[in-house]
Length: 453
Image (cartoon, rainbow, N blue to C red):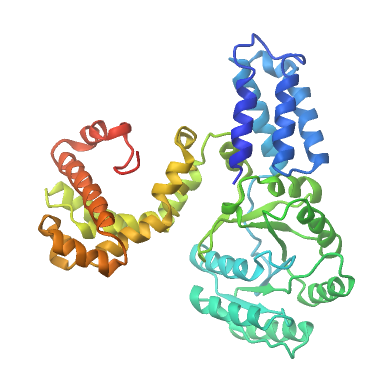
């Protein structure tokens, strides 16, 4: 997300490098570049105008005189205004009310509400230890009801049955009763997608909202939908009094204009980001972290939180013990590392949150570190026998052919993985003998994993 905007802003800031100080004259061209970058990112025109005016007012003021360089001063100003534009610091959902706490999801057709309902349920179950029930009032799409039922089972949530023959308000009454009897802490309501210009559907949504009396009403919006999504958010807010926004498909949008517009236009905070198809791919939205990511400063805090949540400490400790004892690093260990990297969204997703990411060729990174490549490598290892995983040097030509056939790949792919394994094995041996410093010094590129140069 924000790939194009990040690149354009970096170019714009570089244009003031070497200036003695920031003045209205020498930042004029820079601000024009920033304005074009924001418009290309599909940010609303009114938002762009206000953003540029605020930067200009601050850039030529007293604040800049205390800064070290004009470039640093401008970065600081843009960062501050981005944080302001994106909203206040992240605030958790309110669970102080008498259970079940009702969360209603609303949005346009195809915005990802059903998947978001399951993702939110999983997050509340795993992180907040809540007992969650899901219910669908989308009586116009039988597949949506079935989908939510399947997802509820997958994430470990309760599910209230509904059908296309029911009235949405009747479903809400039944779900509230079932949630109380089941001692659910949270009831998440998945509503039917509707266009904000459809008066009949909007009246029905208002009736559902009045019956459910939700404590949180979240507008779910596709981050690639453009300015129409911002207009829709305003229309939904006028009817429902939204408490927040969830941006879906954020991992597939290089522009990010909706994120920069919806908070300013509606006055409602962005609460969560959908960053993938998996049920755990939902991030809390932190304006300051996102502003840093946009400006290429990385988002290390979010990366650390993901590592704590998704990396198995037991497996990491087991591998560390093996290395300390001088025991061999084998293919099973490599498979564990690859699977944990997949849980993190791949190396590309991890590096996006690090300041070094901007110095790496994005195309090469996606080509070598995407999830498909990781899945292929795991498939190759799974096609090996336990003995081959333990002693990869025993894998000769005929074994390579069998492994390639078993994984549905080519012998060249097997050779490539074996070469990568040998490089990692050498590093692990150096690590056991001389520690991390020796290992890092020996790595090509000063610290990048083998096979990613």
